[in-house]
Structure formats: C-alpha cells, structure tokens
Length: 112
Image (tube, rainbow, N blue to C red; front, side):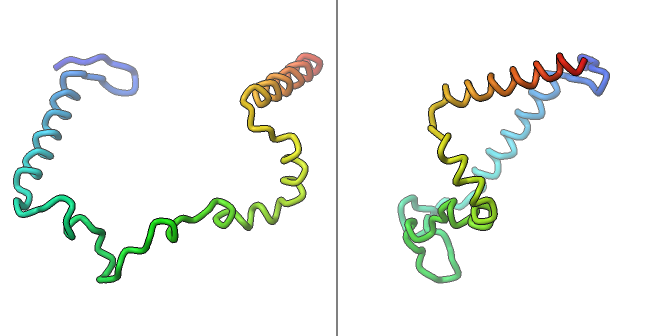
C-alpha cells in the first residue's frame, strides 16, 4: 500500500479507512456482547452516586461569576472600565479589531 509522502510521514487513505472500519467492527462487537436485560427509561439509566439521590440540575449549576470570582475580583478596576465599551454587538468588535490592526500596521510601517 503506497501512500502520499508528506515529508513528515505517509498518508494512506486506504489504510485509514480500513483502520476506521476495524474500530467500528470492534465497537459493534462490544455492543452485541452487552447485557440484553437493559431497560431504557428505568432505574438503570440513573447515574450511580454511591446510593445517594441525584440532586436537581438547578442545584448543580456553577455560574461563571462564582467560578472566576478571584479573577474578576482581582481585575475589578479593569472590568469596571471595559464594561462601559462592551456592547455585545459583533460589528463593534470587528471595528475595534480593524482599528487596532490599522494602528499596529502604521506603527510597523513607521518603524521600518
């Protein structure tokens, strides 16, 4: 099986296709050998939490404010100033990006 030599290795689509097909066959064999007494929608589908009841999803949700409180608190001065210009509109961000890129290109042209 000759493949395409890329300089970093050989790309052989036939070999990759055979490998993928082999992985699918192995996955199918594992599925066929599974338990036949499984019932969808019963107690068997619940997560096992060491015998404890599963909490409600609303109580498990961790908000980003709590997860990053140290970062937000440490940079509170910066976030207060930046929230004033934060609009959430994509075209505003593109305009800022183009403007900053233009300034950088002008500086690079002057330095040369």
